[in-house]
Every structure is written in structure tokens, then in C-alpha cells.
Image (cartoon, rainbow, N blue to C red; front, side, top):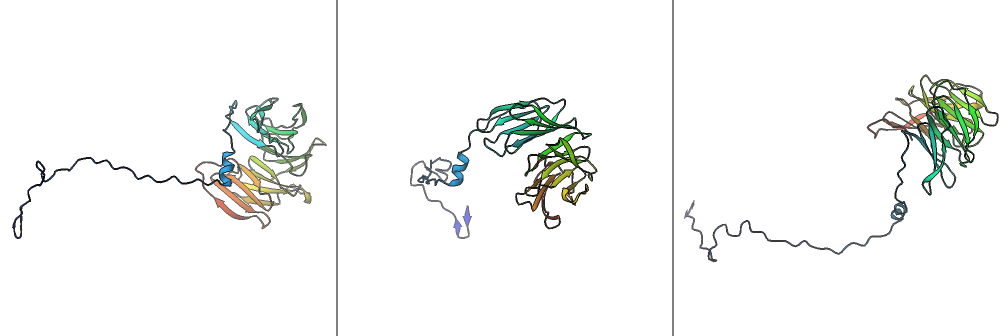
Length: 280
């Protein structure tokens, strides 16, 4: 090897047996630096999540089509699956009651807010009201001609039930009289969801596979919708926010938030899911 000034002369190694590449490839262990552990501060959120117990695994007989919690302690859970509705105690997570008096598939088992009664739809088009203690049938409403996929108690009255059916109709039932007091027509495809207004007893919202959400008000005596909202996809479920001024609809990959008091204005359309949203 040469340079501009002449040949490059390497110095002789000072250590005997060492050459130009001596030490290359030798492993020298490096001790990791250790730091004092940080003190974990207790937070309200941390206490909240640690209060949860290990989950309970409940095996249903078939596909679960509906879940509903009662509003009163001990917050019983109604699980609808195949031709039965099983009610669990949410505190002990043990089975409390089983209802299997259905000729066909049951849908939308919903507990009354005080958990003393339960209403259930079904493939046969019958809406049935059960007593929770005796499991006896208190009422049978049989005017729907196709499957009833969604039933709800009125948030203001135990004496009123609403149902949405694949026959495209929405019906309001008087429990005391045992009859239909209002039939709402307007949907052109399956009506798959129903929700009562949280403060107005006469107002209901329904969702349908005709891509619309319709609002019904019994005060004006009309059976047609007072407002129609275009969701843009088959509607699987609807829900009111507690104030009653906003309504949420889900279907397809979209979650839509509507300002009902503002004339049905679409406030927000959210698309975060890869598959169809089934409930809200």
C-alpha cells in the first residue's frame, strides 16, 4: 500500500502475537443499565377496571339474536337464542329463568324496566307478554302476518308495547285491553327495529330494510310517518339519546346521528366498521 508521500509503513504491534485485526470479533458483554422502578399512582379509572371480575362464559343453544338488561337491580339479562329466552342474574351470573314456550324461533326478548314482565317477538308473527315469576303468558298479540323482529315497552308506560315486523308494519299495543290501538304503514321492506322516545310517550322511531328511519306520532291521529330519514343502507337498529333530541341509526357500515328537533338534519355519519353493524 502506498500514499502520495511514499509507501505506507504499519507500526509493529506492541503485544506479541497481535496483528492488524487483533480483537475483531471478540465478544464483550455489556451490562444493561438498571433504573429504579417508577411508582404507580392509583387512579379512579384504574380502580374502576380492577373492580370487574373474570367474565362468565355462557353457552347458548344456537345463535344469540338479542341481549337486554333490566333497568332495576339486580339488572337481569335476557338472552334470546333459537326458540327460547334465558334470563340470567347479572350479579351471580347464574340462570334465573328459562322461557321455551315458543312454536318457532323467538326474537327480541325485552325485560320491563322493573324486571317483572318480559315481551318477546317471534318467527310466527306473535308478540307474547310473560310474567317473570310464574312464567305464564299474560297476553298474546297475533295481528302481524310475518316475523316480529323487534319489540319494546314504552319508556313511560308499562301498559304500552310497540312491535316492528317483516310485514313492513309497526303496531302499538294496549296491554290492558289486549289489542292493537295503532297500526303504522309506510315502510316498503322489513321493519327490523323500534324505539320509544325517552320523554314523549306517543313518539316512536322505526328502522327498515327500505333504507329509511321513520318517526311516528300518535297525537295527530295519522297512521303515516311524521318524518322520514334516509340512512342510505338497510337499517338494523335505532336508538334515542337520553335527551330525546338526537336519534342514532345503524346499518351497513354506517352509524348516523340525526337532529330530530332540527328537522331531521344529519349531524354525523361515522364509518369505522368493515362489516354490517347490527345494533346500537
